[in-house]
Image 1 (spheres, rainbow, N blue to C red):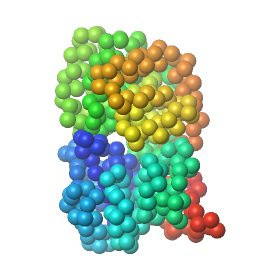
Image 2 (cartoon, rainbow, N blue to C red; image 1 turned 60 degrees about the vertical axis):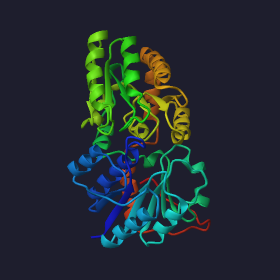
Image 3 (tube, rainbow, N blue to C red; image 1 turned 60 degrees about the horizontal axis):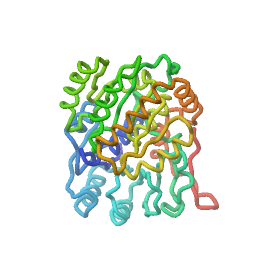
Image 4 (cartoon, one colour; image 1 turned 90 degrees about the horizontal axis):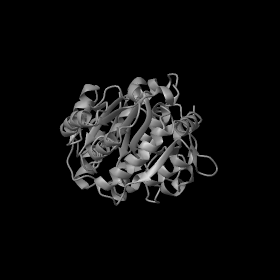
Length: 367
């Protein structure tokens, strides 16, 4: 059986989102009977443990990321594994790398969040942002199969199943969730927890979901105990939470970085305060806010302490305004988002290439 190669990196600096959204598709590919292999120049022990625990093969390859040695190693893996396709996710792969990868002969699926005009040299392009169809992918990947919009938001299997359960109204969802991704490069989790605990939000349980790749994970666990005693609040830290679907389903409000977690929170209809912490998050976060299910706060350029004070003030105001949060949840329910994006991506990657129409533009239907 041919193998589908997944080329994505993770580190405390760049975060873990690239690998995690590829993992969602890898799960779907396995459900459909296909085998995958993760290849990384950079990874973290937590990500390696997660892939191993989930039964996925993963290998380390030569770097630096996006350079000649990386390309040669990736192409060598494709030959050795008789790879039929390769999924590439990251911002450090330049045009020469992408062109060289496509020249290896396997189908190339490129994740893209920017739509900045850079040639992608891909046979399939995925961008789950609400306004992705307005971006110039016809020029960036001529003739490619375009998988665009919220219907292609990749959810891991556990979250897909949780998204199919009955939605409870926000009044029954008593968790105020804080999550800044797998590694929280800006170090916002601790300052935000301190500011929220000091505000003593009424009738909620504060939970921070922290990735095992976060170098401050142990410190944050200790902080939660101290803050709980100091302010008399119900506060806990979940490291590499194995039940994120259930946790999100219990959340009446989430404070989240504006990255890949967006699609998960929207699918679980969680009213959310999205915090833009990096340039690549700004466009999709703004698009999401326009749909009404979330509010957006831009933390770029602020110190962690200053950003935390602003974030906590807005989160506490949202928590106190249950009618607004219910309207946000209702807006999420109305989204064209059923949680099956990973399944659609997997089918598109492994199915026969569709015919190119008279415009040269190829696109999949949501089915």
